[in-house]
Amino acid sequence: MDVSAQHEDSSGNVAEIGEIMQAMAEHKGCGTTGGSGKASCGSAAGQGDLPTEIWEKVKNHPCYSEEAHHHYARMHVAVAPACNIQCNYCNRKYDCANESRPGVVSEKLTPEQAAKKVLAVASTIPQMTVLGIAGPGDPLANPEKTFKTFELISKTAPDIKLCLSTNGLTLPDHVDTIARYNVDHVTITINMVDPEIGAQIYPWIFYKHKRYTGYEAAKILTDRQLQGLEMLTERGILCKINSVMIPGINDQHLVEVNKAVKSRGAFLHNIMPLISSPEHGTVFGLNGQRGPSAQELKALQDSCEGEMNMMRHCRQCRADAVGLLGEDRSAEFTTEKIMAMEVKYDAETRKAYQAKVEEERVAKVAAKQEELEQLAGAASDIKVLVAVATKGSGLINEHFGHAKEFQVYELSTSGAKFVGHRRVDLYCQGGYGEEDSLETIIRAINDCHAVFVAKIGGCPKGDLIKAGIEPVDQYAHEFIEKSAIAWFKAYLDKVNSGEIVHAERGDAAIRQGALISAA
Ligand code: CLF
Ligand code: SF4
Image (cartoon, rainbow, N blue to C red; front, side):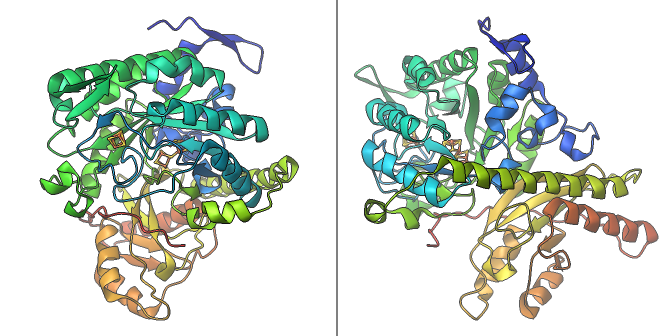
């Protein structure tokens, strides 16, 4: 790989982009974990961990920074309907499953409608910092619509970061255009680097006016994906790799994929679970191909973490998603509603709002550091998972019955580390608790020792305790990490004094099925 491109950092030093990309890929510590020096979720990297130029690019991108995803929102515009390959986990009736959960359909837009939508959302949600194009097909199989949209937005809202997600087949043909439009973040879905395995995932591709199948198709696809990745990283464009974990097909192989993309300068690797059920009408759904369990997914992510930054907070968003990751406000911004809206784009208001968000972030990190100091010197190999109900801002601020997902943190003497999230069915159905939902919630967080909530009723409390999961509401509306560390310290004290015996928990289920928009 030619990494001769150079740039100047904020201190005036000229650095090799290749060196910086390598430093990023090898980044293992996370200053925000209390300086334990232990490898941590790379996407949780803080200001002190990354070169200034890279930090500036990721600090308010909710996908490229785990920490930012509690505070900043992204939006997608569904301007790209066509696709040039077939994945066995995709049904073309729906959005591109490389980013979206299968079974989700987005409202398609023209570039002009998309530009108006971006301004409408940016005016309503000042913490929306990133515009992504991720489907419903492949953005680079629809290059005119994709780049026209970027062009319109870069003129009217230049403070919004541009982001793109692609299957990579035509990527090498578009790298110069991507750079020209200042698209600073590109995701490539890479599920294999071995065409034998690829042939089990991709039945065909359409390339240079010709259809290819089997090994030949997968060989072309992998070559083009890796070439595109190299070309982007040579230009200093941040690349994230999405991989779908398909047990029995590519689960072992993804370790090889991780090495291949790391060596080509990828910044972040996002291993997502296959979501597969017969009603999606996909090849994998119909042939009974299962997705991984929560433990299987975490074990693979953990095994790749020593190699490079791993993303664990992906929500497999729909192609017209709007809002914080994990919330879906797309129904507030339908074409009909947007066209009727009078939009006033005020960059200054957005800036002022974001300055307040930054203050909140600083307070959160300080609170965590303070709590971590209390844990300093504690020696224990115990690691536990806890689930958290949150509406955002890094706070425990959601009621158990209103949670549509739980965030999962791993607690150890190194601190609290975000390791994933679990989507669940709402427990509270307007005044009463839904017992069936409670069962699925318990299955979804069955690997957790405790669940942190702002509030919880007596019934679910009792059932959770019976299932061995401690409901914790004493930290309502406080910062997540600080509270979780305080709880963990008390847990260790109880174990050490013999008051309780630490026991491992079982596995948990990743919920299958499509996201149903709440709005
Ligand atoms: Fe969208 Fe993707 Fe950009 Fe993010 S999503 S194009 S990088 S702005 Fe993010 Fe959504 Fe996961 Fe994608 S959580 S599906 S990783
Ligand atoms: Fe479907 Fe996306 Fe694969 Fe195309 S690239 S077949 S839209 S999952």
